[in-house]
Amino acid sequence: MGVTTFTQEFPTLIAPSRMFKALIVDSHNLIPKIAPQGIKSIEFVEGDGGAGSIKVTNFAEGGHLKFLKHKIDFLDTENLVCKYTLIEGDVIFDKIEKVIYEVQFLASSNGGCICKMISEYHAKGDVELNEEDIKRGKEKAMGLYKVVEEFLLANPDAYA
Image 1 (cartoon, rainbow, N blue to C red):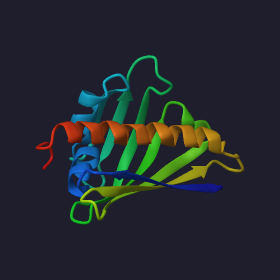
Image 2: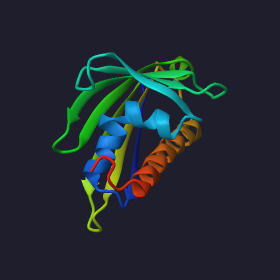
Image 3: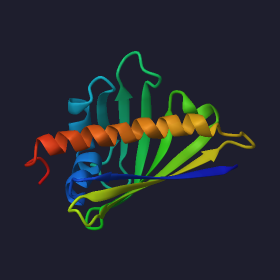
Image 4: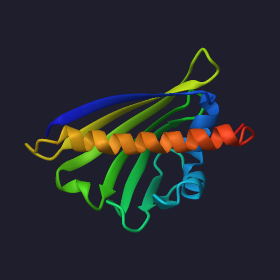
């Protein structure tokens, strides 16, 4: 089983605690509201959002994916860190066993933060993963960060 690791950073003018609350803690409520063209719903099927919880993201009709299921492995609301594992999906699991993500929100000198994401793609057997496909998927995820950032900039009291 091969492992391919990517690290991405997204700088924003939003304070780390606000980005963490919006993107991690309350994503199941916020994201379907501000990105309905891509995300139909996010629901917890196990747990209450803490470590051990499992949530399902259902995508809007006509998209590449129908659903993804994640398990929250670790959630540190003081240090603004979340580690979770993609455990099920309708398309990608022909080549991938799992994807482990670690997201951290680090304060920056301008009052905003750096959203840092490390992704480990665990391939099945000797399967070679297409890095361009992975990069396209990561770009879509970063697009979601941008949508959340725009919402928070337009709504300065949200998640304050």
